[in-house]
Amino acid sequence: MVIAYILPLVMVAAFFIAIMLLLDWLAQIILYSLIIVLFFLPFVLLYKAEKKDEKK
Image 1 (cartoon, rainbow, N blue to C red):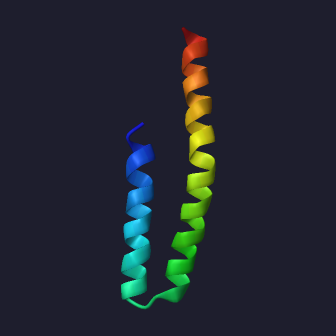
Image 2: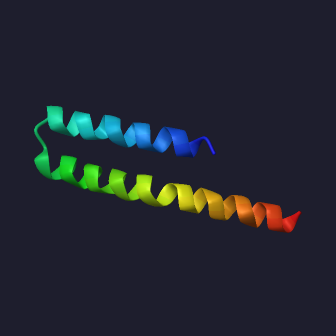
């Protein structure tokens, strides 16, 4: 569950580093991947939690 907190923060930091280095293409890739991760990560974590509860 810690990855749910760390991954978006790392991606935001990488996005701002790419902007500071003027790598527009890298900043766009990181931004789009951040949006995708923030959209799908809650569903993945809910699915994993449900599977864990199912086993009990």
